Length: 173
Image 1 (cartoon, rainbow, N blue to C red):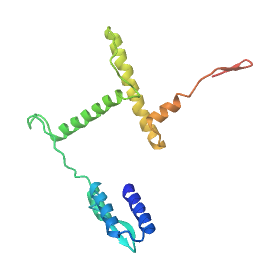
Image 2 (tube, rainbow, N blue to C red):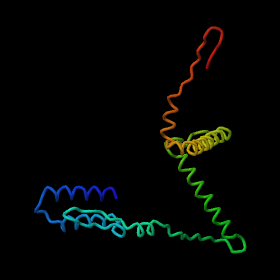
Image 3 (cartoon, helix red, strand yellow):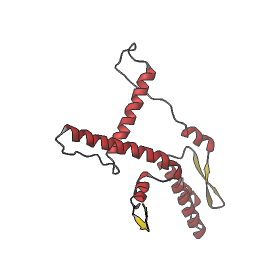
Image 4 (cartoon, rainbow, N blue to C red):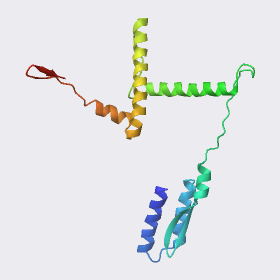
């Protein structure tokens, strides 16, 4: 919508500066843009006294914005072994696990292959990675209401320092 409104403003400026310019050509150009952006279903361009105006059909926009609410989950389980609710729940769990792995491979956690030979060190590496994922998830939830991204928050936390100051016989951290 911003692109269309900007284009309409540009065309209106051009039409006001050029009295011989054709209004229908300007309407055609903006209408072509609405077609290209696939918003022509709910956006109409009108001209009143050589001034283009954008009209949005709110009813059509609301109808298009509604989700289709249709998806199909296919399973090879026999009907007697799994109810649809259980299958759907397992699919959601799988989506959460995939999201967790994408997060672990992101810039903030950076899970990468580490050459460790001992089982104990491998387990420790995975434990630390999972712990960092849980901390990241918790920070995202807490910072969501503050309109701060995880990356911005971690960047700000990187400037936090701790120094020890001793005044007289009292020591402060």
